[in-house]
Length: 244
Image (cartoon, rainbow, N blue to C red; front, side, top):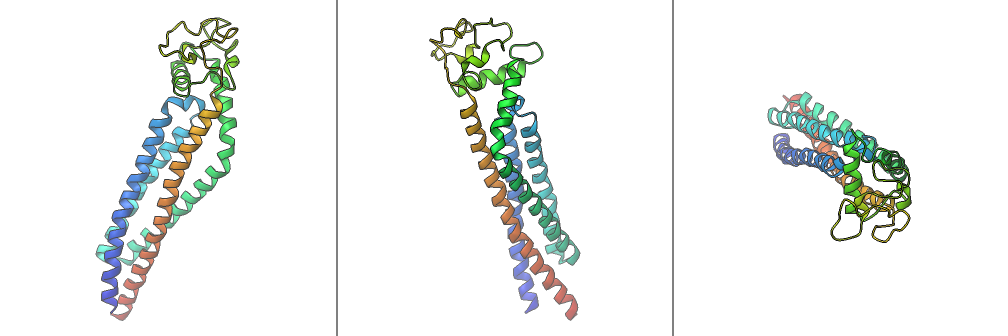
């Protein structure tokens, strides 16, 4: 009876480990998505999103290693390896939940953090050595059809090499954007977007954070199933040893 129960749990644990490997792959993909989607705008986040992306990729890789203990432990019916798998899985679960709670608590601070970095970065627009900032602003203002942080007047005195009364060409609302279309538009904004970028941009950031966070939480609860299966198998292995 014990042997039959062990075979059943072993089969289920093997099936789970396939899901677990896919979960690790999911985290790696989620990290890559964050890295790709936000790479243009890292100057607005102070590097925090880059660190988060790298962390997701590392956790995904660690999950692959943990899955090795689960597979080997189940195949060899090794009590210590199965318990190691369960403990490590539990630790990763706790860390993921803690990270999720921290992200939820910090969600309302995204607006303030991004706004501060955006205002600071405006001073480096078009400046030598800050090409990443220039590209980030141009990409954002074209994609979100906006100009400045709160509104287009934020560019007054903040641009380099554009003139005191001009805004970047990416602010223009014309179909054919030209390099000179932002000249003189601060005093007479007839062909530029006048709304700021902060609201639309932070809404987009939060939306993507929720998607990645949802994936992480979903995978975390899958791990709970893995811990339960590993504990059941370990208990069955221990009972078999005790009856021998």
